[in-house]
Length: 303
Image (cartoon, rainbow, N blue to C red; front, side):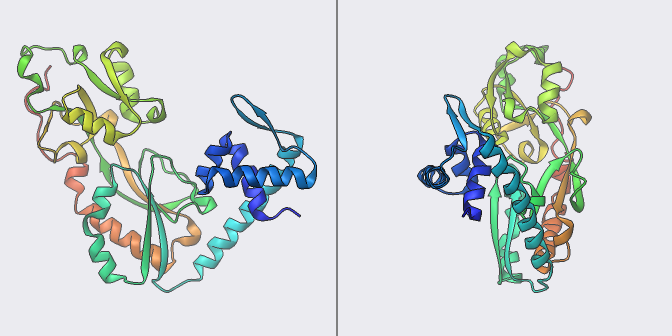
């Protein structure tokens, strides 16, 4: 008999392409995934995957298991949301997903939240990957996005402005008429290609001038502070940092919107509502920084 852990293992390998990546997705050790898969194949006398040099490819049997697993997964997620929706007490665990850039803003008064709701535990998953709330990967998402998924509900917190920054004193050795497009730049790598900043860089800066690429905005932020080059950053990161200077005023084409999102089945769950109210208040108090109404450009905007 196949149990749910077996089904989840096959589905995770099919989605991830490798056993190691599947283990990370499932939150288990890689050896556990190998052991489960090998045991399943021995028990049923069939191979679920072809092991190729570049990854695992489902066989016909594997694809059949994946179809069944997806159906079970959907049913389990629906059941979980329905059961959670019956919980009217402000207690239990709230799983929050957000980005590495925003976790600092959310955490400004977590101690106050803890005092107000001592029976609520928070599980903060900091990742740039947008968790699927329909599969119950998380309860609340705090995300900047131009267009939130239509399957989710929530509230719009603020605009998120972005501008060009350089390390303080970066232009000290450059002529006053220096062309920004001729400077060294820090850019996002392919994993962040969906960001407005990535698309703007492609048109505004020659690719040969981007000498440093990062998989997270926090890595780009650190490189900018170190004077590696110019960088597009959210104003809530760049403006408060004394080692950076804003080179240009926020660019409208880089603007996005900060949303607090949850699944419709969870919107009235007491613990989820309590956290969303708290987060909306904590982030709302920082609206000026989020929307770029902080330090003005330092006079280099005409470059």
